[in-house]
Image 1: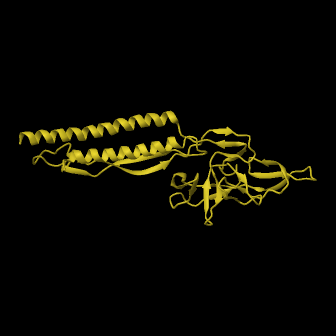
Image 2: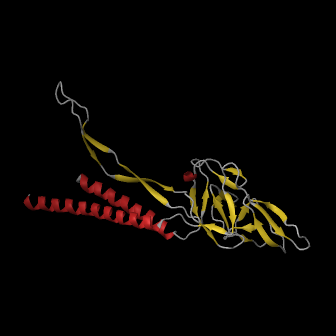
Image 3: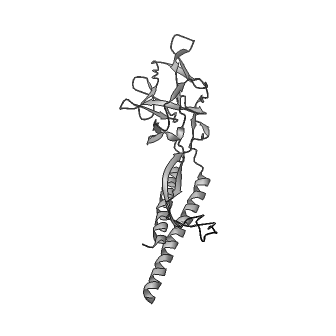
Length: 261
């Protein structure tokens, strides 16, 4: 195979993967607390035809070599964990994290997942749960009947119960912090799980030791910038077209050689 065909083919594959990443970002532009992805590429191995610094004569050295690239490959996708806009919802069980940190969620298999999606609900037994029914950790149960739910900036949850004018404190939400947020593994449903790359979580009270604070009645929006993604899409499309054009050009050159051979 002519090397240019292979190089252009790797370029087409790379731009297709880039478009997949951009499409996923745009698809989740309205997903609560979604973090945009970024594709990371690197060049493939080089073919060294002439070594830089090699000797051309007994007294002369070649200042630059002849090294030919073999294309590009996708090596990673990484999440951008910059904070999205905090938008009001006026719903008492909606909670946004201002700053660093994740809510803890108990999954059905008994493991803990992490999320910044604070769209909470009240479960069948009064527990605070996610929208798909998973328990928030630590577990907090609202008494029935109760009213005046208040979630303080430090995660303290209190309600008013009949027969008492003094709010009753039910518990306190904790949030988790990681050394490397980009090392978390996204598993869908706005949740992540820890990996060796992310490190073990550090649990603490919101607002302490670098943890973010909570804001009741608000949600964090996606951090996807639509204009930026559209510009990236145009750039990717042009790069895809250029790689495709390179293949067409090589094909035309081969046809010309066949005609004159």
